[in-house]
Length: 203
Image 1 (cartoon, one colour):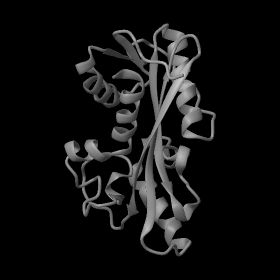
Image 2: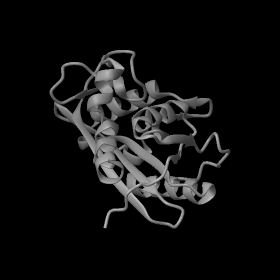
Image 3: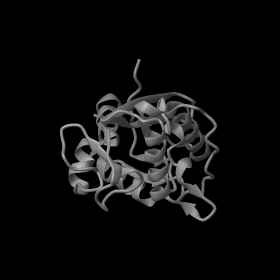
C-alpha cells in the first residue's frame, strides 16, 4: 500500500541550489518546508547503480537515514534510441572534465556518435526523471516522468541547462534551450514525475 507523506519538513537530497528552489516552490502550497542535503552538511553518496531508480534510492535513503526526516531525491538523464539508451544514468558523466562539467562537449560527443552510427532522422530521445521519497525506517515510494522528443543539430537556444539546446520535445518546434523556463517546467520529465509523486504521496 502506498505510504502518504505526513509532516511539514522534507529533505531534498541535493547540493544543487536550483533544484532545492524548484522543489520548495512545488511543495510550499502544501505547507511543507524543504531543506537540502547541502544545507544540512550531508555528504553526497556515491551513485553506483545502473538505473535512475537505483541511484535515486541511494540518494534518498542516505539523506533520510542521516537526517532522520523523509527525503526526496531525483535521478534524471537523457536516453537516445540509436545509442541503445546511452548516455542514460551516465548523462552528467559525459560532460565531465577535470575543471567541471562541459555540456557543450557532451552534446558534441552525443551528436558525433549518432553521425558515426549513421543514425536515421529523426533521432529519437527521451529525458527521464525518477523521483524517490524515502523514510528513515527504510520505506520508499517512487514516481517516473518521461518527455519524448528528438535531438537536433546545430543546437538552438541558450536557456535551460545540460543537453537542453539539442532536445526538441514532441509537439513543439522549439528546443528546451529556446523555451521559457515556465513552458519547459510545465512539460518536462521532472514536471511529470513531480505531478505523479504529488498525487501518489502528497495530495
